[in-house]
Image 1 (cartoon, rainbow, N blue to C red):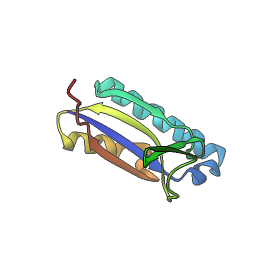
Image 2 (cartoon, helix red, strand yellow):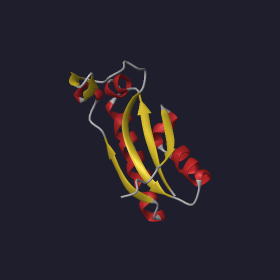
Image 3 (tube, helix red, strand yellow):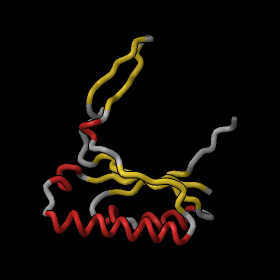
Image 4 (cartoon, rainbow, N blue to C red):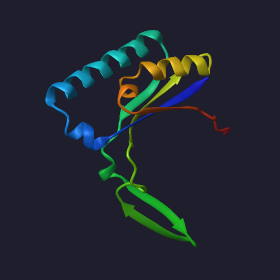
Length: 117
């Protein structure tokens, strides 16, 4: 079964972190990604640009509304994701708990609902 591991964290905190902490976090993510690749569970994954680079689209009464920046002001922002394929939710939760971002933010684990085409 496929799952998305959605990584939420505090962008401002990471932006103001000391260089050594950023270097350590990057190394931890590289090791984590390599572990997923070695285990054969990684399907996709990427880091996202800051939420200040986001554009939000809504359609109200047939009219497009395009807004710069994130839709909501929250304490944590979506910063990246991994799509994994594992046997069950317990395995997905185990990988989520190993994610370096789990130590500083939140990892949302969500099953993929395949679209029939």
